[in-house]
Image (cartoon, rainbow, N blue to C red; front, side):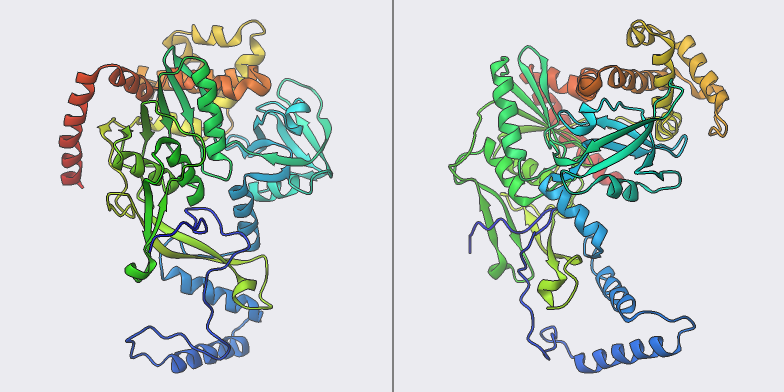
Length: 512
């Protein structure tokens, strides 16, 4: 049976809706054909519960034992089925809607000094208007020290009801005193299409970071703007996009489809009865521009739905590596909907079906192969440790403060010898740097470090536009993007690359 019900989620959440058919009071659910005595099993569980509550060396609350049992039961299923505690459930709802009461900035605990650090303020938010900058250290939130505070607690303290205030104590590298800034929380809308610009006179670039309720509208707006700037073909970047809602995936797919085309279908335990199709409608924005999709092993779930649909329709050319292979469908069931009186702030996330592309490929555990395979960009061990420690941000800050005039341009002109010396001096100044040898600073490593540090300098210099400027810089120096542009402009080279990909993918399968 074919129907369009946008309720099942990819990585997202069913808000305020339960599709679980609950057995009546006193009923026991027994798998069809099972010879297991369900009454006996439940009696054994109850007896064990009583034993633990009576005899265990330490007293344990009944709810703690019961929820622990539920967690264990769900752990026997698959990695995606779980009991969602209040914090996780609340965060998932916030992430799925894309709106929440907060300050409008990305923060992170930096590895080099274990401090809560501003990564980027979002345009038009309280954080941006207050002049917060990348690299600012948040040392207190409403008088509470952030030392040894984990990121979830820090985010929780800064989020809150729109209209309420929060005071941050900020240390900015290069300043002598800590600043106190009071900000009023607002409803923050996070863009799932954070980057769109022209990479050359005819090629537009759009990145989708996740799939939420406004993604299709944001994509349409970006396409319209780039069309006005002369776009003739589009690079749609879905790399490292973990997914989002099924509805958003279908809406994004139909931007490139014909009305009525099958986007994806799902099947649960009983395939004939649970077969559900999701098709594009005649509503919404559409474009006929040639499309190149960039995907990698981090492209999952909703990203794979879009990729699989465009590939099945022969609507775009897929570049990159095989996607993640997250093709199972999770529904979120609020506990209070399952059982009256149960907590309203907890839920069960349960795998209920699997996704199939329009041409019948099950995504789960398989992923979507590209038309054109691109060799993964592998960062060296030194680069990974350096960037993972946050050292690129610290060295960028030091360099910016030491060069008042054109710091980004001065850094770009550094020779390999001078850059290596700068890195070695920086490492020597750290109290507990990771161990390395001088010969690790190869030309390849220095090129990688130059890209990361220069991008961070651009971010810091640009204020609220810094992140966007840095994104343009990174994409301009992205070898995958350069290869896509080259092949999309040369039909014979593209055909050759597609033929070579068939051989390459077969070789990779053999290696596995």
